[in-house]
Image (cartoon, rainbow, N blue to C red):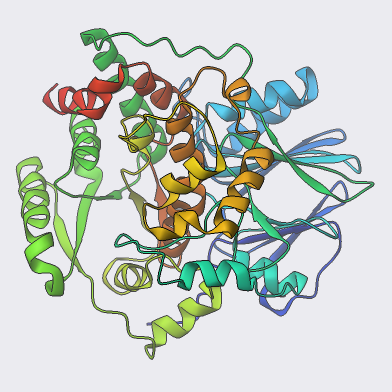
Length: 467
């Protein structure tokens, strides 16, 4: 097995030509004064009309035209950009599904970077110096010669930070100084002349309305129709895999696959650790039963304890030094699954259900956000609280800017997905390309239109599976 994959499906964008060794063999594009460096597996579509260009990395879907390729979507985006302006192009991008990162470029004047709904294709950028954007924070740090952020490292390694589900960096903290990341519902803007990057919130739009009403049959039908269309738009006629568990989220995705008659294109897998068999067995048995009833081949991915001396881990550490999420799972994917498959993972749905159940406080404060980041003692750390104070300003995380959306939902949507979940997909990129069917704004708005109690009980998901 080849253990030489580094920054797989990665990219680097700069206003200067680079000689960074890690990207020396990558494909290079030059558009309007901006240089794009693309790893060999990175899918890219470019469309230019006169002095305006659109670049889309990854896979994008359009619910209005599910057969459109990412290239066609790039063309449409550029037409919006050229004919109606950047704001209309961004609105179009905002309601695309898939897993992608979009760049809209006024040649030699301005570049704007827009993430997909949950920023599942990560973007890290330099907060000082030239315009530098990258798929991996370690790649950015190497190219820009960034120093390790000891404050952030001390937080992650603190005995006060307890997190059985895995640790991640809070608020604006990252393992290297002078680096930040793009959050969902925010865009990056940089003028070519001054070469500085700033973050701006673009969603909710001024006319966004999510009217809450009790769950009705028509809402379930609309949800099923939208999810089914998005899955069909993602997979089209190609074969794909689904990460299957015994939970509601992947159960809904599987039910949609069955409804849309995509079973013949589908295979499934579930990761399992013999060391945690007492905890994971029930989930594995349920997933296996679901696959059997659906007539879908199912395999078990062997999750083994971390081995820092393995060939895989040495490869993995080149891409994820100081920024790991779940290296054992990345290794299991790499060694047990076929490479270059398309995989559906049913994350992001908790944006539309209820992740944070305790919502007694009605005011956005750094202390409250810190307590939602972690319930352990680290929430009281002054550096953590200070970083969340900066986060509120950086992401324009205020009631006025959130336009009536519940800030508890938006905080999970933006913070946990950008700082924690996006690493999952990047780690999986070492072997295969992961797309999230729930990562579509129309779906999320539908889910948020249901009363809190029904969302918390996952009533919509249960009805969807029973449809």
